[in-house]
Amino acid sequence: METAYRTAPHAEPFRRFGEWMERVVAAQVKEPTAMSLATADERGRPSNRMVLLKGFDERGFVFYTNLESRKGRELAANPHAALCLFWQPLELQVRIEGAVESVTADEADEYYNSRARGSRIGAWASSQSRPLASYDELMQRVHDYEARFAEGDIPRPPHWSGFRVVPERIEFWQGRASRLHERERFEKDASQPDVWRVQNLYP
Image (cartoon, rainbow, N blue to C red; front, side, top):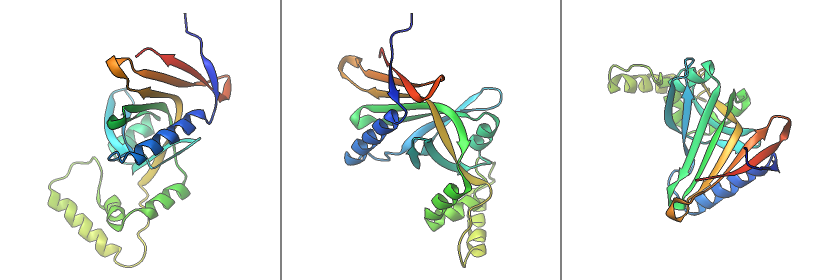
């Protein structure tokens, strides 16, 4: 029989995530926004890599990428993903699962324009996840795009944008002694979109 659950307002897990992120930043944990991103192709075969969280609010959790990369192609074919952030020094972990949607062009432009010049050039030069004959070939492409954009702004490439993971499930994990960890899962209530069903889980 399913154990009893309680409910929480829509903002609650995002508020808690923000509090945990503040703790992590204050503790000077290296790469606090690093997270694992799991995707799957159209046949359900998974792949996983590390990306950086670039923003979050009550709509979801955002990262950016080359849309023609493996993850971009997989998300186009199967728009669902799982994220995991683990901050080992504090023994904190957050797991996020949900559908994926594209960010708006304005959001992508704003973030792209905030990046260092070298990173913006790199977005043009790298055919991410495609075969590369040699590193020299990549450097030549960087040189070519530096010449192309020697003057003026560097526009966002049409193949570069962001995704938002819209969470259907968020789990907070706190490490404890003797592996008696605390786990709390927030799960969207299909009948009440502004409410989460919350359950504690055995470690």
